[in-house]
Image (cartoon, rainbow, N blue to C red):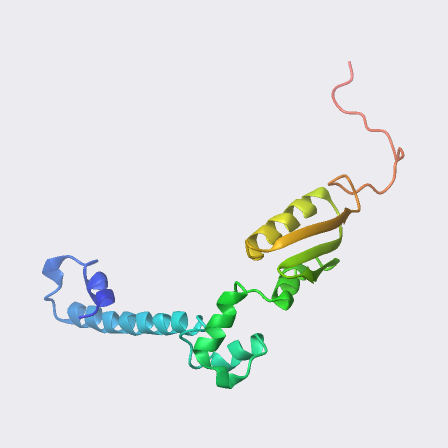
Length: 168
């Protein structure tokens, strides 16, 4: 009996386990949960370039490698780049910040340049950079903040008068 099925069966009282139809239901659902567990294990296996079989062509294409290099070669390339290529880094940043560009200025050195609207956007951009760039890379930022305020101002003027409260 699989681990998932045993965990599912442990949710029911012991005296019900020997019942007629309830036991059949629990046994059938347990088998289904074991299949789900095996499918999840397969998904995890395919998400790693070193153990993938079905997704190996996509992994090789992502790193512009020939398919003949095999899963071990793709895994080594993946590990040597930290899993991030320049295109990956640019796509990840430009998904949220379209005015930001990333250029490779040397070996393991990058420049992040462009403009963001507010200081909150700059803080969010810095957190994205900290999260996705490999730690061994040196990143230079050249970011312009368009507005110093975090609110939009359309114009200044008086459009009317408001009186609140009770008149005495």
